[in-house]
Length: 58
Image (cartoon, rainbow, N blue to C red; front, side):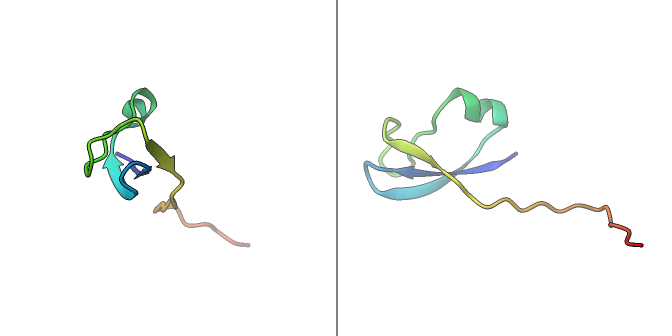
């Protein structure tokens, strides 16, 4: 499951949440610090992918 990054403007704390893509589309998570939901914003985070395919060069 993907890990999403959020920031709570109410308490000024960043946090991460593990949720499915469907869950992410349906609800905004609760801040684990102040338990607020209205002032939580999504943050853009880096993506890391590991593949097993090797590219062939000529």
